[in-house]
Each structure stands twice: as C-alpha cells, then as structure tokens.
Image (tube, rainbow, N blue to C red; front, side, top):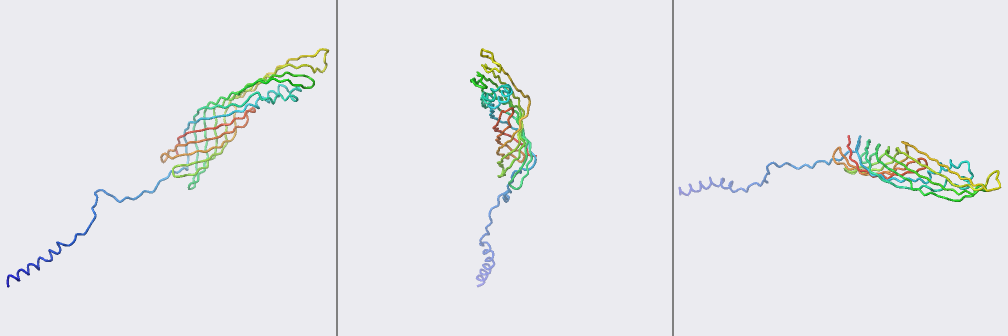
Amino acid sequence: MRCLLVAFGLIGLLSPASAADYDPPVFSPPTLRGSDTFVPAYPSYFRWDGFYAGAQVSYTSSTSDFSGATQPLVAFSLRELALLVQGQVDQWPVLGITSTGAVGFGGFVGYNIQWENAIIGVELNYSHSSLDAVAPSSSLGRRVAANGAIYDVDVNASGSLHISDFATTRVRFGWAIDNFMPYATIGFAFGRADMAVSTTVSGIQTGANPNPPPATQVIPFFFPNGEAKMGTYLYGYSLGGGLEVAVSQNIFARADYEFIDFQRLWQIATTMHNVRLGLGVKF
C-alpha cells in the first residue's frame, strides 16, 4: 500500500511538467537579416519653370521668289518711253523661283512660367548658316508696238541672295506630361542678307520720230541697271512647334521645327523651313 501511494505521488508531481512539455508551440514567422519595410517613394517630375539656355544644330531649307525683283529696275530704265506703259516690259517674268538648303548651328535662351501642367515662356533663338540662292534666269525677246513705233526688245537679268544669320524672338505655349513637354511657338523673325539684282534692256526702235525724215529711222537702245545691298536686314514672322524631354533634373533635349516668312527685300520673297536638334540646361 505504501508503494502504491508513493507511485501516485510521483505521477502527480510529473503531470504539470509533462503537460507543459506538450503545449503546442506559438508560430512566429522567420525574420530575414537586414530586411526593412518597403515604403514606395513619391514620383518626382521635371519642373519646366525658370531660366534655360542651350545649343543646337539645324538644317534650313529656303525658297526665294525673284519673279518681281526686276520690275523696279526695268521700270526705271524705260521711264521715259511709251514702251514701258504699252508693252509692260517691267512685268516680264525674266527671273524665277529657286530653293536651297544648308546646315547651321546656334543657340537659344529663354524663361518659362508654369501653372500645374500649363507652360508659357519667351525665347530668343539664333542660327548661323550659309544660304545661297541664285535666281534661274531666262532672257525674253518680244516685238512691241507703241506710239506708232516698233520695238524689238530683249530683257536679261540675274539675281542672288545670301543669308548668313537669322533669329527669332518667340512666345512658347507648352503642356507638361511627366518629363515631356510638347509646345507651339509664334514670334518675330529677323535676319541679315546680301542681295544683288541686275537687268539689261536692249533692242531696236523702228519709226515714230516726232520730226520724221523721209527715210525710216532705226534707233538701237541699251539700258543696263542694277541694285545691290550688303548686310541688309530682313524682318518677318515665325510659326513652329517641338518637343522637349527631360534627361535629368537640369538637362533636357529638344526637337524643334520653325517656319519663317520674311518680308520682300527688293521684291524678293523668302520663306524658310528650319529643323533643329538641341540640348539645354535649366537653371
């Protein structure tokens, strides 16, 4: 009996410890060494407001219309003859239209103001190039009757235009799309050019003398004339557009197109198409 009591006592003492040993373990996920909680960063966008400047390369295609360039010269040469009014010799299309192209380089500087996505700015854009336009020429010869006389007239001409520098002061309207900004421009254009036009009106007048002698008179005539302007200035307007892309917080690249229409210089009408690639810095 004593042995039985001792056995029950030992079982009672061991029971709590054994129950504790068999409690189910509490699950805890493993911890990786060096791991931190991931917090997404707020996106950062390029700000387009402020001053900026840059450099560019360009290709310019220009068209020059010389068809009216001979008019003032021929009109001056024949100002005292009825041939001018009745024959309208000054309207003869001796010179034509020509196109030329050249690579250039330059720079730009400007300032932008930004309201949320909307951007408005002003910019000065300069290009140096070498555009040489030589007018196609076709001499014209006609017989014209004026005041009872017969005129056999020949008109010859030549013309050239060289543009070396041009620039535009323009307003830009843009819209920011993350790190991209498409824009449109309108502005005032000016340039520097050398121009030369020359004409020769020659021929023979037969008859129509105020005091005619018995025999018919044959009178030759020859009227050369010319005009040249060196380093003269051109003025006009410009329209264009382009796209700028932010490369970093202060650097951007751009592709730009611009159309320029200059006023007539000595009746020579000139237009330009400019394509540019540039790299700029925002301050």
